[in-house]
Image 1 (tube, helix red, strand yellow):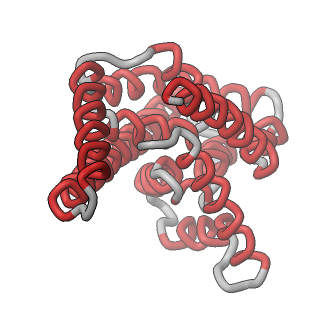
Image 2 (image 1 turned 180 degrees about the horizontal axis):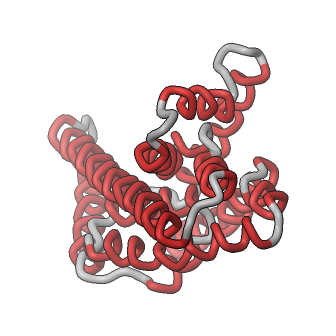
Length: 242
């Protein structure tokens, strides 16, 4: 992606559009949709939790479904045994990992389409200068992808795992930059203790703690910080080229 800030800007725009559509009663609220799913899958809690965690873990779609909050509430309200908690946690991890796989390949697909567009500009561009600049950009992008294909940053992965939506965008970026697919499986392993802790904290403390984590304003605040960091990176990149 040419500008770092495009992804957080698109995230804020997505949240704004969804909130507007819900306010105007054009689409139902995400929680209402989850309640309908709960009724449809009554008696099949494992399948239900897998589906709602998968829905929230997909990039952009996750802004609509407060699935993580809903799933943990289902677990806590069911008063499961420890063995049930283990199986339910595995379902949540599987749903989140499947979402990471989808996001990773969506990022790869986005990068492929972007590269194809760059090649078309090179082929059909009207001015020679534009062609040279596009070739240079494509070459630099290819070099960056090749250099990053075998590695990923553990530090940024841990930061991304603060929220399931931030993890979705992180995986999208990993796919776009053609980084190692190993990051998807590693995130899945990290999700095992994460969801166990989440269920334990919700049942031991209170559901208000989890509601805070799913608060739209908190999510917007996190994305805004991400946007400010990206704007700074874009400014530094622009300044170094001029």
